Length: 353
Ligand code: IPM
Ligand code: MN
Image (cartoon, rainbow, N blue to C red; front, side, top):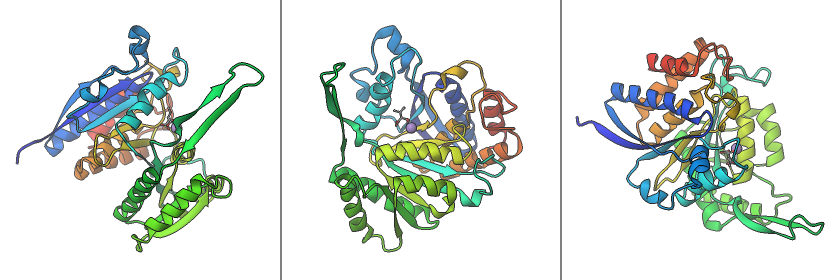
C-alpha cells in the first residue's frame, strides 16, 4: 500500500501555543509511523510576536499561502502586549470567516479518573458535543459606534443570522448526530423568549430540517436553562446546536465539566474546504516558556484533525493513549500540577500509542 501523505499547516501562534503544538506534532508524527501515514508540516509564524515586529497581522495573500493544505493545526492566538481584539479578530476570526469554517465542533467528554467539579457525575454522564455556528451571529462584526468617548456615545453590535448560515449549521448538526449514533438527540440551544427575530429563524429552520431526520429526537432549551442542565443533568445531552455567541459561552462551561482547559479541544470545520483544529483554552501567557502547560487539549485537537481526514484508527490510538495517560499518570490536568512537564506528557502519550 502506498503511504498516504497529508500536508498540515502549523500555526503555533502566541504564548503557550508553540509549546503545546510541539507536543501535538510529536504525537502526530509518532502515530503516523504506526499507521503508515506521512505528514508534512509547514510552519507559519502568524501571531503576536510577528505583529509586534512587522506590523502585519495576517499577510494579504494568506489564503494563497494556505492553498493545498489538508488541514490547519493551531496552537493559540492572543498576546499580552497586543490590545485585545486585534489578533483575535485579525487572525483567528479572519481565518474562521474567510476559510468559511462555519462549524465549530466542541466535544465535551469526561474521561475516567479525571477530576470533575460536578459531584457524582461519571464519564457516562458527560459525553456530548456542541455544534457552534462559527461565521455569523454577534461575531459578524456588524454595528458601529457614534460619538465615541462623549456622554452621547452609541454602541451597536448586531447579531447577523442568515437562513443559509443557520440552515447549513443545523443540517451539519443533524448529520453529525446521526453519524455519532449515540442517543440520537439534537438539542437546539437558543433564546426564543427574548431574541424573537434571530431564534425564530433558528427554530423554524431547525424544525423544518428535522423532518428529514425522523430518526433524530428533537429538543429545545433556552441558553440560560442549558447552562443549568449542563451542570445538573449533563447526561441529557447528546449533540447541542447553537449560535456563535452562545456556543462560545456554553463551551467554556463544557470545558470545565470535562476537566478544564487542559483537555478541551475543538475543530473549526469547513466540510468542503480547509479546516482548523485547536485547543480551546487560549494562549495562557503567564505560563509561557515554563514547560508546565498541559498539551493534552492540543493533542486531542490532533485527534480531531485525524478524524476529519477519516484516519479513524490513528485517531483512536491517540484518544486511547490520552485516556490511559490522564487516568493512570497525570496528577491533575492543570498547568504546573500534572506531575510532569509539557514535553514529558507528550512523551507519555507517544509511549502509549
Ligand atoms: C474561542 C475563543 C475565541 C472566540 C476568541 C479568542 C476570539 O474564545 O475560540 O472560543 O470567542 O471564539
Ligand atoms: Mn471561547
